[in-house]
Image (cartoon, rainbow, N blue to C red; front, side, top):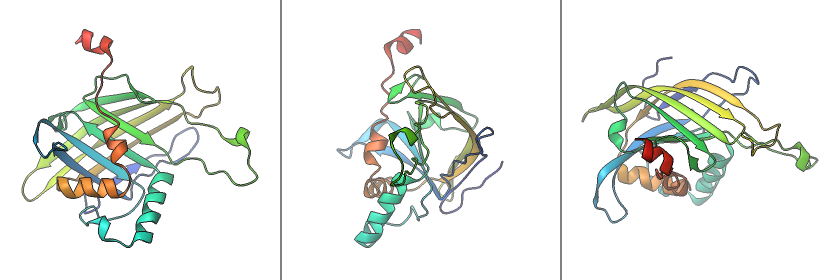
Length: 225
């Protein structure tokens, strides 16, 4: 499944083989290198973030210039549709040929923290006739394997592309009927300027999500290194 990043990026996933449910964060895909901290000082170890959204917009535009009603609609839609974010600590982990894995149980990191991915399938929409028993949650153990096919950073073309395998499973803390899913696919993301990317991420209400995945690795993993 080969993709080449267009202006808004690309992503494509095969349906879950058992449920035939789709995962489609393929409206806009972009990446940026987080090289400066909140005090505008250069980070010793810059990070890379990739945002994959069902919502279609131009990540090279300043979204804050849009009318307020349009922005509210976008913030609402991005929370109710398929969304995925990926994070590399440091950004040099995102190199051609890299194979990395992220394992999260809720907010607990069970992998080595070099690569973290937050998979957010669109939430189930219940109508007024539904009751609490009609809601079936998704499993809370979420694993993502990434294989990076290309990571070219040149003045004329900065892109990152690769393949993904997503596995959502239930844990002993989940309800017995919690949903499980597997999706595989590919993505290609243009790398855009940091300040504009961060402003748009904030405008869309995603800043907390990006910052919530700081790599705090469990002690037992650190001891085994």
